[in-house]
Length: 412
View 1: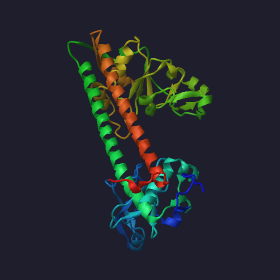
View 2: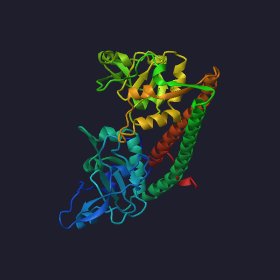
View 3: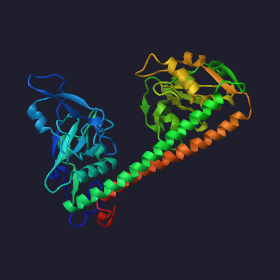
View 4: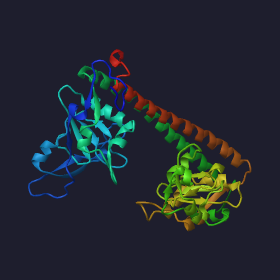
């Protein structure tokens, strides 16, 4: 027999539906007022269930429950929880290793309480693998917002190994995923350190001093910087021009999929059409995200949250791009956007008035480029290692919950 993750069943395993392994219960709609005899209690919501199967319970919200509701919607050690809705989170699953006394859960969460003979850890790992495969996205109800309803979840296909096998698989994955997660955390700390080193290098180069000359950013530009397309009309990538958003700036690669907009709309915003060599700067949200537009991106356009900066002298563009990641720029940007803490937006007039100190030594640009290239290469390689580790984690979970790995001989 075949299924969404398996071609054949291991000996002694059965296939069925989630309802054969656990009782599925949807949580309570958010209640912000006391109806007269309710109690206030913490509740689990979608944000508490992380993509990697972890629970993040540091941020806790409370709402009103009837006493009988709180008893029916309790959370015990051994349960699994699955996110019911939301574009980025539906289908995320996690296991509860201990009781959460006094807690309930919102209707963004489905609780799975395993039947006798089933291990909640195995169920959670299986659902994590199923979501990673893309099955949940295709299976969920999608109208304006995707939902993995309690009924849909209950009917989701699942493998049903003997309990002994479930426990062995869960214990094996507990050990192995902790090892991988620890390695990922160490590599993420390395990326943070490399970025700090990058900022320190930039600050040393662009700090005001006898070897630098201070001017205004606007004096370096051939024209006033422009924002991009405000309301994009997306089309298939093959039918339009590439569309650069803030999230694309630090990861521009020819083979990386991008959104596209209609050619005629791009032409309406001709001031921000890319030729190649411009500095692209994110001006909404997190400041300091900037890159040089590569030649292969010629003809593309940018989102409203991206500014296109064209320098009078092409040789200045790499320096300007590097300076946009320095403490000097970040400090001035922080002062210029301090009035909008929710969604900081950098104005182009403000940017043009920023002070920038450029090195006067002709060789400084090359030395800076060499150092930054080494740091950026290390960052890229480390991020790739993190990505591969996450892929290995996902593949390992899938292989284990489908019986492709015989974990009985594995030792801690």
